[in-house]
Length: 239
Image (tube, rainbow, N blue to C red):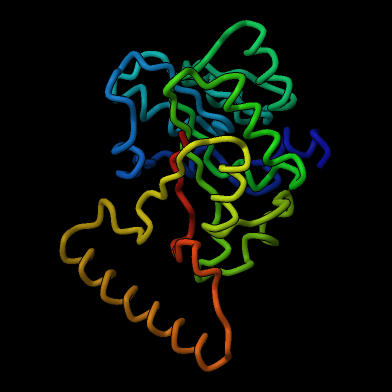
């Protein structure tokens, strides 16, 4: 995809920073953040900086972001955030390696699906070997092809190169050399109010039974070793 398109990505997609004014960090992210408020945290593809702002409000003192979009960088800088415009993740990782600059926690939210499919594993390898400090973790979020929206997100965003299921996301993370992969909030219930949580859990149980029934009727199946996750996005913590 032409980099000039990505520079204007948000305006072309009809998305502005106003959409994130009420952003509240999801509980599943809060639960895995480093305990040390001095941890070095990097948001890859930081967009309008909503996650960085939340981290700053939670007293994390060493947070930064990178993005390819001029719109995103300008918005982040207007809020006093430490952000860097990059032309490619490869170049950024190599530069960090030369400068011996590493991070303790990396967030990569809805970025992986924009990378050329043949480069995804290589990119994750570079992140792991070049910019992750010993003992660091990486939180990856991507749209879920097994969710109720199905293949919609493969085509709704023209810059998407692929979609993931839990099985394929696990595959690329492990192929990149990460030792462990843990899927967070697989039922999308973390942070829900008690009554709403119970109701959603009930409907989700019915939804799963329905899928199993029609798989049986149509002689269909899923890859048995792969987690069956049906939320809109997959959230994986890699170490």
